[in-house]
Image (cartoon, rainbow, N blue to C red; front, side, top):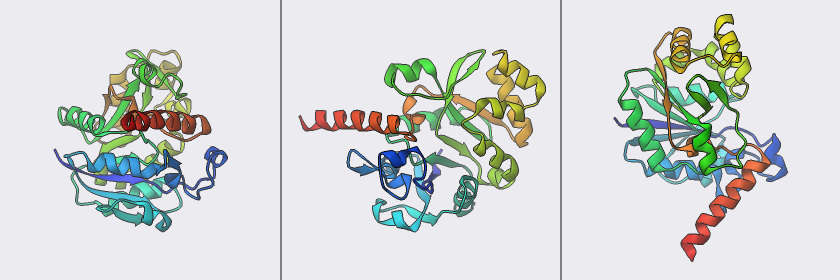
Length: 256
């Protein structure tokens, strides 16, 4: 299964990362001397299953993008950027949407996710990573976790989906993206009984998949990934410091 990819790179640097970089856009913030978005582009370009790559971002980042990618000018919101990317690749059966702030991402993690997706029949595939897997690789990384019957998980920063699903779910997409960092708020979208189970930590992965599929009107599945790199993003100074430390250590070992 070959798919096209959308990289979301439109976020202005107006949040907590202003403390570590004066770049106008988060995608352009350098980690180890390289812009954040470049790590993601290069990981996707190295993945055999990825065909076309579209970056949704401001015109100002065009000069830092590697060759072989198409820039679509970003809009005012995350939802609009997702839809702009989907429109640019509307003829693709499935697109892989990835954020531009996961510098540890690599070919093996992407290939593994796509392999696991290929084994299941669905329209929306979303990766989740266990706290145990995350702590083994990045124990100092602070993440938002959700406790389900099967374990404690955090979400990944990518999703495999049909462009038509996105176009037909604009209102719900907007609500989910707005609340993506607040699991307790997202639980309210599922309804009272699900919210109760969520707070009692009795909600199962299968129940969650079924309810989300009902809300979307299409089948959605969660993919448990063993690669925390999919979910380790840079959106605050402590993340930036971790990325600089890890990438610097890797670069140093290669030069030794």
